[in-house]
Length: 595
Image (cartoon, one colour):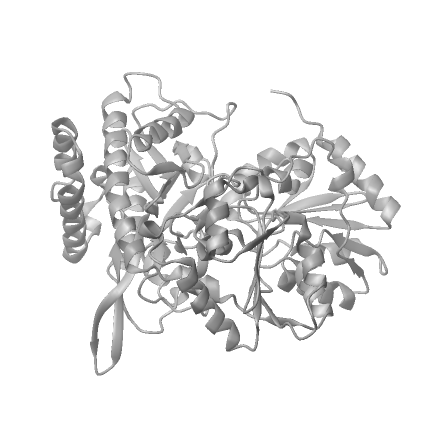
């Protein structure tokens, strides 16, 4: 593998900075659409720093620099940043300065901090601008050095887009647009600027292959009461899509034309724009023209509440995904210790089994297969250098997911490969207790995810254990595996959990250098009942796959927890077994037998 000279890249960047009078340059992970997984063209932070995790921000000054990332990537970042020599700042730890504080303490008064305004949201950019101004620093948002120094920079993705049928989406573009139009009209807006790729895909009922794992199309859209414009390069539009756009009175303009278009809007054209999901450059343009209406995108909320077709599609996808998982677990169970199996091989096998299922369109994220100590790296990605060989002992943590036309899946199982310690069995069981605590929760209308997060952690806290990631995230419908606005985590989020929302349930625990444990199912918020105290909701567990019983210390479970696990396993067998042959059925029957 060719060794990348990150120091030369950083030197080239510093030369551009000196020429432009910039003392510190912020390089986020985002693209112009604030995507979690950007297309290769916008992986600037990885290109300059060497750190490839999905979350993190680099800061380069004229003499030093660092990368801020969260607990999921502490171990990975420490390893990958050795090539660039940039310092790792571990977000969330008491002794770690925030990125902005570090910059303010590092630079002299009057210095200039810069960012490419397309790579941060308007809300984030305004916060930074206010902070740096108060510290006597200048903030520049039009610095674009990668256009010059990244000589072989990938182009904007050019793959063709396609229409996503109503038989999978459940609602037509016109029906969705009417809901959006009403929502923005209530805020006094005539039109809406759509920057987020998943919102664009959801509203228009189109999908694509522009971003790895997320079936989205790179583009912008402006829809109003009088005009509908899709900013999408012509080469991406097939004959079928062209007909579809014409039928829905949607005109096409080049991707790069969005700036000029917005500048040409009349002063009375009030435009709704989400300051969190739209980039700084485009939003600032509308704000300066005084025709911006800022607020949470109504699409974010509408998209999070799945309709009946989406719910049924997801349930069907879970059955097929469950069958693929059972085939994988059977293969692992019968081959471990008998042939060479590696972490990379695990990911390949999962793709093989899922690929045999109808409507499969690829992975929903890169498989995390961490054996023993690698399981403690929350978002571990096996490389040729780190690729561990599995042996019949200890834990294997496998977090994986798939994109099917009728639903997106995300599942984590911690698998017993051989003898465990009592500590490993205890920790596994405590994580399971937390998982069951969320799965069995009943909560009143208006409850937020942060109000129930403790149910997943309380048993771990009792033995002074914890995990630093969230307990649950929203999941799209044949869309992004991570979506909002809802979540389940310690940090406050004012979004209530309402029927139709799909959310993961994934407590875990990680001991650096030893092992990691996580158990994850996807859930659907559904009605539980009502009383004189109002409506109450609960979670329907959607994921269908055995939870490894071999690691459970039954003495730590209550009778109610055992009953939940046995009922869950009965459901798994009843729904998945019809898709299996007799050999796999027999294995599943044993794996789901009562505890």
